[in-house]
Length: 168
Image 1: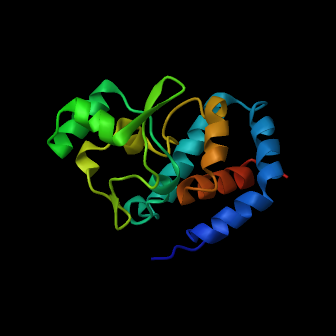
Image 2 (image 1 turned 180 degrees about the vertical axis):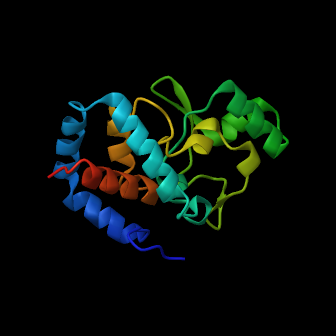
């Protein structure tokens, strides 16, 4: 379902992200001079508004482009979901990058028809994505800008935030 003012076309979002790369980094610098609490409140409200109109589970683009870091709890959940010992799950599905354990396949090995086949056992960082509900948005704005080309929710929230802050 389309919602006016909401962009969900992944190709268009990727193209716009490339065109707006400099603008987005200027916006990130601009945010650093703003009131952190005010920005968090705006981002939280915009996230609620936008995510209510986008079916995250119908997209799966994050699962095609991002490899989540895993905690010990995530490994336990993964081994439980797969009915294999944790060591086997680690060997088959993970890799260590910069001293952090991550899922190693892109797109994610658990992505089936744009849906997570281990949804109830997915890693915490996947469940929390795109992390716009968290506080300290300004300190995490680089992460949001990195995800701007991948996630329609992030794209639409940042575009609305620019408008509300009268950026540009």
